[in-house]
Image (cartoon, rainbow, N blue to C red; front, side):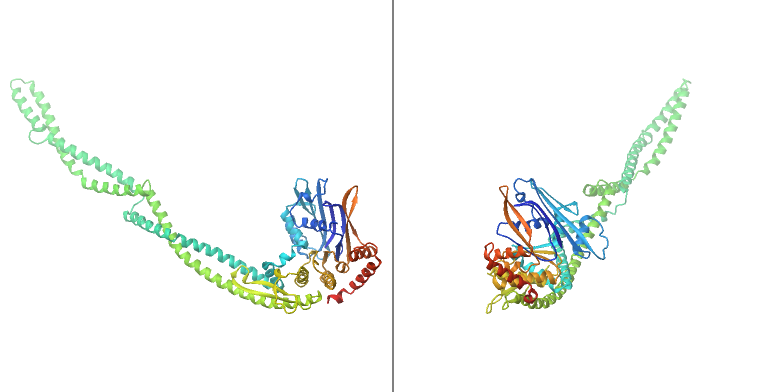
Length: 565
């Protein structure tokens, strides 16, 4: 419940401080007196756009502050606890005080506070909307919105319907995500098929080579060794030819020994040379024998095989890596990627199965929701028509149509509320109702039937287009809403028939002070209330006849429970 409101420098309001009690309060005054600013001030606590043009001319900032007292079980307590980032202590009895404030500076910047702590505007909006509802000039637009009508029906149907609605929405969103993912699988199918062919070829090529880690280095070392042996064999073959054989070194050395010994018969000194050459011949013969055995160690065929293997591995390294180890690493990666592609195909099949299962589950849940809506639609029709009967619309026919649709987050149907205000008419959608007065009463009836909301509700000219007996019915209904639900209701009205039913009456009037317009806000006592109702009835100050009519209205209002029902 809103208990205290302070407004400073907003529009033509200089400073206003008001206290409110439970029940229904009427706010009245001439057009332009400042009633709109009172509603706008509360709108600032709901997070409405901070507009520096709202600041009273000549001032540097505007300020709105409201104090609320709510029961410990009120839903706003949890919102406040989250906003302040603290655990709300358990309170079994008593009231909890919540203070909201907002200031708008001349540069357009705004600050918001909750219980004295600065908070973001988004948080202010969350807390404010848990405490206040303004059913204002845009109420008819909201009322005519099919999404709002569906939400309202689900709330009327009860917690099970609200829960089923949430489940349907979750499942439909999950379906959307899965279908998008499946579409991605389909889009990539050709690319995956092409990639799979490439990977299969590459894997087969590498596996056919049967590489071993470190093999290339070993082959290159062995090839170098064998290549050396082949070169050695060619060299020793040539050496052997030069040392032994006809006309070779061994034979020439032997001939040289024979020639020297023949000559030594005449020149003995040549014998020593002959022995030395003979020793050389023996050594050359031994060397020739060793060279002959070394010729068998060279194997060119083995070297050719190794070089062929090296060439094959080198061809793989040019395609898949710098060496054989890198090629084997690529083989592992390619095999893993191929497995992923195969798994993707399996995943697509599994995903389609999950989609089918989720769709079946969503449809079943939506059908359960449809059954609850169907039952609730009949009950809502009966209750709203009953209330409309107390609002001078006894012949009105109200209905809630369920319009089949494809499965969506809202279920298997849309909801359309329709009204026929007069006998012989076919019910039409609310947005096609021509009379603003009729739509205002439908709005009020829906508030009475649908709402068990503990928020403070401000009706801003909900009586538009209403007069006479219908206006009295609206006033009685507002009083009943405030009293029967234990709620706090405020109504901005131009109709004395509505204002007379309020528990408290606040008058807003525009005065002049120091050459400037200023709004004056007064909580009226009974005599002042008679004067204000008289003015509203006749437009004249001090009319005795109007005052009698005002007295009659107040006496009539005392019978509000009878009028209401």
